[in-house]
Length: 180
Image (cartoon, rainbow, N blue to C red; front, side):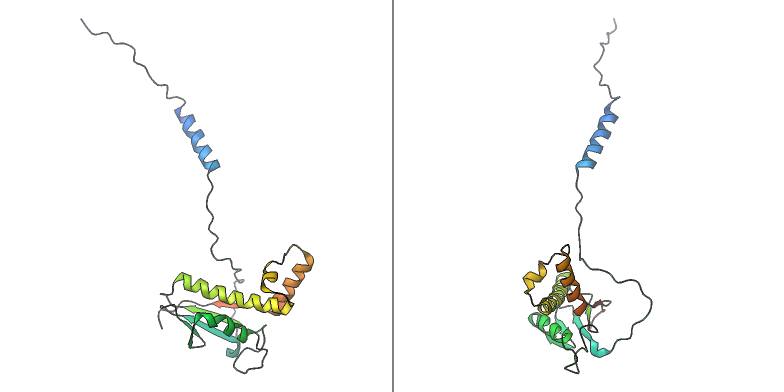
């Protein structure tokens, strides 16, 4: 006698593909993708023309592989960078070794390939702070008030524009050096 085969229970897989696609769509819609902001800087317009600068108007900052700062070929402590930068920018021709005016002053940052990203960002933040302090002082307000000015308010936007015209932020990020 042969064995009688019973009907085995079967799973209907016809709608499995539909369920899988619905789950995929659900996870695609509900998942948020983290957006890294990086360094917020406005990049200059691509210009193939070379610009001739009077060396007097260029403040050179080198950050070596040991994260030491050389401002105008002089080793300085990080704490002095902001004051040296402000003095250079706001010279207005008084000292023949510093910039002619804030409009002509350019800050040039060069790094070594071994410079840490953290050191570079700290230097960049100090330079931006220098400009912001000068701008706030030109408006006769504190740095905290300056930082909280609202560009949507027409009066405050005009103040910001005036300060930016007086002290345009001109920072040149030069190619990294192999070593020095």
